[in-house]
Length: 123
Image 1 (cartoon, helix red, strand yellow):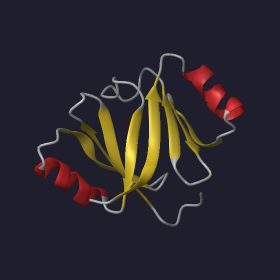
Image 2 (image 1 turned 180 degrees about the vertical axis):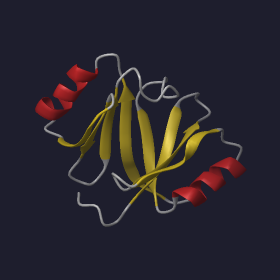
Image 3 (image 1 turned 90 degrees about the vertical axis):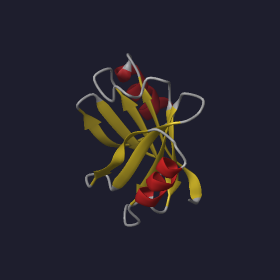
Image 4 (image 1 turned 30 degrees about the horizontal axis):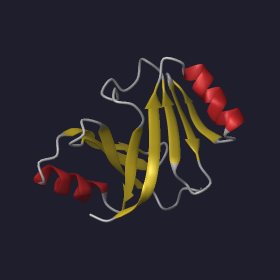
């Protein structure tokens, strides 16, 4: 697998309204989705930052989650699986935002991911 860059960071929080306000006002991130206790923001380079409220993503309990951008998330998932890495979720596809991702648990016990982004999506 070839990691291209960090493509995503997400955090699960008990204070989602404060974090959304922080992302929008202090960091000036552009909102791309909001609702159902989950908010997504697009960064200028096309990467994504998300805020999850307490009702979302029960497996994201180890702190902020970083996902590495890859060209083929399905192939990357199979490489991780073949290396004995525990896959927690995925690959999962969201046509709404043009992403496919897989979450896995790394040797440090934290959750990480690999992500593939549709080329046609604007940054």
